[in-house]
Length: 169
Image (cartoon, rainbow, N blue to C red):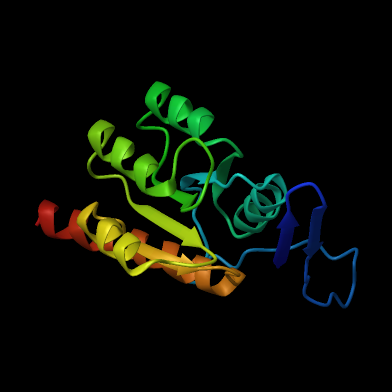
């Protein structure tokens, strides 16, 4: 997906969907697929509504339960009200009112263990350092492929499963 926006002019979106042999065939998530979700709840945050819509649909079709927000402050309120309702957070780095880094910092105060993925079209080296200091799992560069996002989430949940196994042993 590519997005171009210019204040006062408007926005253009290029969305690329995979070819479908039979449009009537529903998407089926193979439970043996290691990258598929298993119903884990994800908070997906981006100030571009269309990206929230596409990201939410993509993740839900891959087996995750997704709450999408297009406003950082609303996302933070939602997280504060239900801090244990999410197993991971995907948030845009560049948003008005509250940046992805500020958002991650606030989440860490509420729930230090929450896995966070940040996304951005451009990542300043200082932002990368700040993200590491905040314990952000990864910063993904937009445009992000479906496969790349699923792989990052798979890594998060695989690490969590391994940690749970080691703690119960």
